Length: 120
Image 1 (cartoon, rainbow, N blue to C red):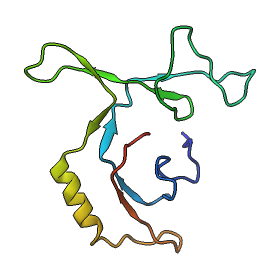
Image 2 (tube, rainbow, N blue to C red):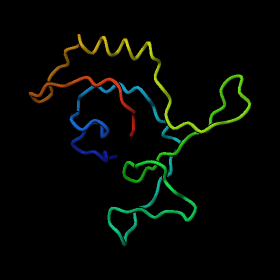
Image 3 (cartoon, rainbow, N blue to C red):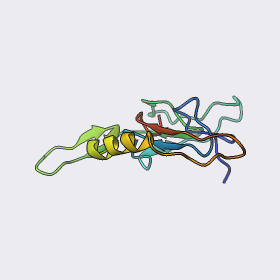
């Protein structure tokens, strides 16, 4: 399957390149997404069901949605858009990123990015 970002990088990090390491601070549950068909009459657009209103941006045909969760000791579900990464592990990644030297790819140095939201 061809990537929707052919030369790419993490789309939410404009300066990133293929081969970079990205450690996001928040994760999206991508399974809770709507996949829409392209609109053959309007290139670059999609066919929306009548009752569908996207809340967020999209990645080609994939439109992320919130996921309903019920935490331990809760009785009601609530919608969650992104789940935070473990703060301790994120601090470890930030600390380690300053000491890691990634191998160059095709003569270009690669970078480590920590933070941000995966998939946004």
